[in-house]
Amino acid sequence: MTTTSSLSTAPVRYGIIGSGMMGCEHILDIAKIDNAEVVALSDPVQSSLDFAAACAGRPVDTYHDHRELLERDDLDAVVIASPNFTHAALLADVLATDLAVMVEKPMCTTVADCLDVRQRAAGREAMTWVGLEYRYIPVVSTLLKQLATGVCGTTRMVSIREHRFPFLVKVGDWNRFSENTGGTLVEKCCHFFDLMRLVAGAEPTRVFASGGQDVNHLDEVYDGRVPDILDNAFVVVDFSNGVRGALDLSMFAEGGRFEQEITVVGDKAKLETTFPGNSVFVGRRHQPGVVEVDAPTPADVPYPEFHGGSSYLEHLRFIECLRTGSPAEVTVDDGLWSVVMGAAAHRSIDEGRAVHIAEYELGL
Image (tube, rainbow, N blue to C red; front, side, top):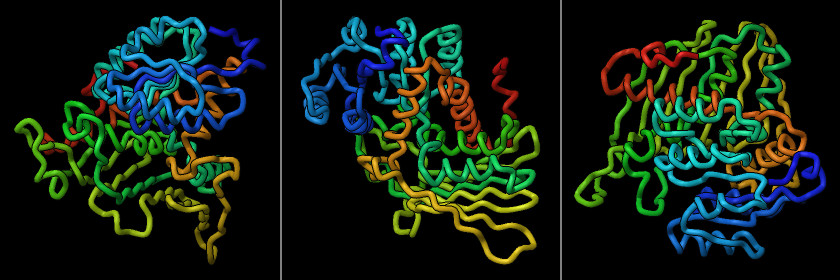
């Protein structure tokens, strides 16, 4: 591994574990960053390796076993972008090294696995970063900056609506079953629970949810099994400081104007934004009209279609922290809490009751 001091000038050398759709997004983004390069790929599926190697745009070494990749002595960082259910085992191997790591969301599929990762990561000098890249979508980061100015006064409510297309097809159709994904409210919505927690500035205490699988994938059969992933839900989250969060999810609503809408309401003002979009709107109480704050995608973002350019912007921050020896901006605890909230929402739906976070005995 290259030292922090030498990283100030040397290219950051990445290994990518998992070269499917999200792995290739990381590869393409890294290829556009000065002084960063992907030098090694690992995936058990040859066709995925071949496609990812083409995306790299330069010669790369490929492996079917991630442990061979980890034996190299020339890597600075590893990205884990494999299927959700593999994260816990892969992190056990990566966290035993001195490599910086970015693990895609969700950090793990269960709360128990997240707690194990938290214990393994504790005390490591190398950076452990969780890929909750929605923080870096320009409209979202601008909304968070506006919130930090105090314009809203005391935050009281945060509401997130995602009305989108169904889950995409993945290699081996692994994302059709909750046992592989952690469930829709973990797999997809950990991003939104992370944002709710950021906005609230406090930890969740209680979750109540209603949801089901009513439209999508009901006519699909894999080895005699019908998919069991939820395609719609409402989730309400109470936070320890009195802030309330609400999620409105539909995965059969791709005909709308916006895929996502985010609203934050305080006792002095309201913030609104949408994705796609390039503005944040600030409406103060008792004042006519709203102020429009520009939030354009930076011109140097090479693939704005990749989550609004957020994964590219996330890598810029990851590399900056790696070069300067700064701590991760998106921590293991952030990854843990985002999974806890999703898991509690699923438990609430399954058991038809409000779920208190204390039930998970997190010991934090």
